[in-house]
Image 1 (tube, rainbow, N blue to C red):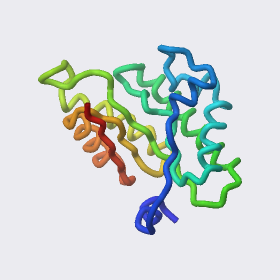
Image 2 (cartoon, one colour):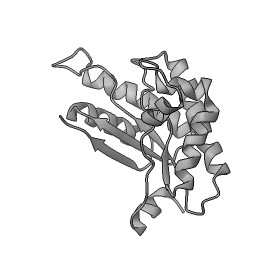
Image 3 (cartoon, rainbow, N blue to C red):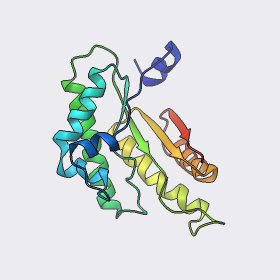
Length: 176
């Protein structure tokens, strides 16, 4: 069954927070959670496995902060590939019987788009397109654009997803 088919069948369960669980595992203030995909993959995999065991259908790769405005593209690719590998390992290890899917988690880029900031809309689309292509290449089942607080950045990420893959896209925004 594909993720799109599962969505049509009725309710599905997603995972929960990652940052707070990583803090409980020793993530220090100011330390980037996505670096743990490379330095502590066993802890990332254990968290994902626990979500699958709790009944989650969709578990997000630990890629929320992976973005070319934060890291060189080669580093983004390493972190993203390691993140997806952690979820794949968790999916294989989990004994729960529900369908299990992997989401590419895309968060805000960390900079403001023009006119309030310095990032051009088209530039933002290009950055998100790189992440989408990497995730699709790694074998994720959907794109999850989350915790956006700028509708233009949400639009840039969504446009990048729709133009660079055929995967389902979920979006959540958080406004103050």
